[in-house]
Length: 574
Image (cartoon, one colour):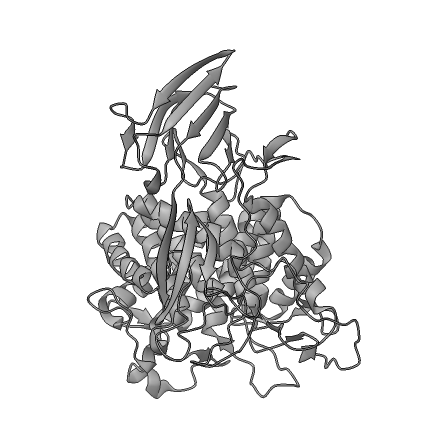
C-alpha cells in the first residue's frame, strides 16, 4: 500500500472500520459480553436493551461482521470482544448440534433452538472457517449442518421445519408435522440456503447441499411464499410478506441457481426482484412488510436487495449493477450512524439492569451502527402509521449493514476467466488495479493498473450516455485518447470495453454528470429527491428527528486527501 492523494469520496473499507467500533461497543460488559440487541436513541438518556435474539443470532451476525470488517479495513482493535463472541457462540451448542437460546432472568422465554438463529450461526461458522481454517469451527459447522438435516421433515421432493422453535428431544408437536403445519418457509428454510451453500462450496459437505436442494424446491415449487406474478404473499401465515426474509430467500435461490447452472431459478428470482423494486425507492428504502411493519425499513432488507442484485447482475442482468450502486451510495451508507451529537448520553450506571437495559455511554458505544428502522428521510422512524416508533438500532442491522459494505467492496472489481470488470465506481484498491472515484463531484474515474491485464471493462452509469464518454490512457510518458462513441466499445450495453491494459498505466475516464429530480413513493408517502449522478443530495420533506441526506456537500472538483487503498493478494469471496 502506498500513501498518495486520493479522492475524498466514499470508501467502503473506512466505513467498515466504523462498523467494527459498534460491533465492539454493543457488547454488554456487565452481562458476560452478550451483545445488546437494540437501542432507543430518542430517549433522554438513550438506552440499549437486550432481547431474545441476543444469543445464537446476534453472536453469529457479530462474528461474521467483525471478520469481514477486519478483512476490508485492516483494523485490529476489539480482538478480545470478538473472542468473547466466539466463546459464547460455542457455549450455546448442545449435544444435538443445534444452537440454543439461553435463559435470561429478565425475560419469560424457554431455552430453544430457534430456526432463525440457526441461519446466523452457520453464517458465522462459515466465515470463521473461510478466514482461518480453524478445525474447531469446521467441526461445529459439520455437526450443526448434520443436525439441521436430521430435524428437517422430509417429503418426497421438499424438506421443511414444522415449527419456529425446536426443543431438546424433538419438535413440540408431532401433529404439526403430520398436518404439514409448517411456519413461514422463507424465514425458517429459505434464508438458510445462502450460508449452507457457501459452506458446501468451501468444504464439499453433502448434507449442506441436500438442505439447499430440498429447501429451494420447497420455496419455488410448494410454498406459496411468492405469488405467480413475483409479488410477495402478504398472508399472516407468511409474515405479512416480510421483506427481509423474502429478499434473503431470493438472494439464496439466486446463488443456488448460479451455482447449479439452473437458469429457471435465476428467472424466478429476477421476476420477484423486479416486483420488489417497485415497492422500494430508487435510493434503497424498503418496506418492512406489507402490513403492520410496512413503514419500518430494515437495513437487513436493503442488504438482501444488494446481494440479490449482485448475483443477478453477474448472471447477465447487468442493469442491476447500477441499481445496487445507488443503494450502496445512498440508503446503506446514509443509514450508518456516524454523527452522534444529537444523541443524549450519560456515563451513569445506577439505572442499568444487567441482562436487560443500559443507559451508559450509548452514543460512544454505537458509533458506526446501522439504522434498525428508518424512514426514507430520517434515521429514526416515528410515523403515525403501523407500529409507530420502535427501535432506532438493531444488532441484526449492524451485522447486515457490515455485510452490505463487504458485498459492495468485494464486487467493485471482479475477475472471471481473465477478464477484469469494474462494476461499481467506488474507491477500491485491488491486486489488479486501483479505482479512484471522483463521484459525485465530477463524472470522473481514474484507474491505476498494477498488472498486465488481457481484458478490462468498466461499467458506465446509464445516465451518462455513451456519446460524451471520454478516456485518456497514459503509459511510459505517452498518452492516447478514446471515445465512447467508437464502434465496438460497449458490451452488455453498460460496460466500456478497454481491452488490454498494462502495469503502470493510468486510465482516466470522464463523462457528463446527471442532475435530476425524481418523486419517490414509500407506502403512499412521496418524497422529492434531488440527484447528482447516483447520489441523493437532498430530499423533501426533510426528516424531523435525525434527518437523512442533509449533510452531503458537492463541489465542482472532488476534494482530495492523503490516503491509501487496501490491496490484498487473496480475498474472502462471499
